Length: 158
Image (cartoon, rainbow, N blue to C red; front, side, top):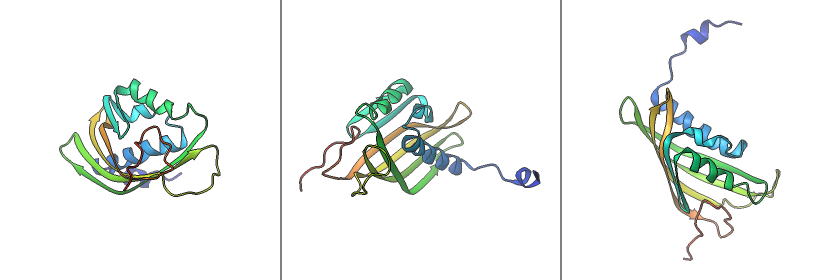
């Protein structure tokens, strides 16, 4: 194996590392049932979702586990419009939106409209030798009438 190209690869920038953190955290929710997802947050990290706020790794882990209490849950969180703003050598902000497709059961499920579109702001910090989410704030923009997520509030009538 030729390792010469690996030796010449530049170190990832903070913006790249934060973008990777964001994408991996949602991949974990979708493909690993969020098991261990609390470790994408700092020990005192906060996850503010529209229907629930979870503080600290233990509470975040328990909140993610709650998603599975009614049986198998299938989700795909589509992260788009990701903007990462380095604030210092050890802090950054990521702003993006998530389009959520979700349902109860196992794949393949019938494709329906998205459950929600939410704006997300992650304040990230360099901690424990890597970038972690210090504070994640989700704000609902659109909620489907068929939404059944325990993390989102019901839609308002127009």
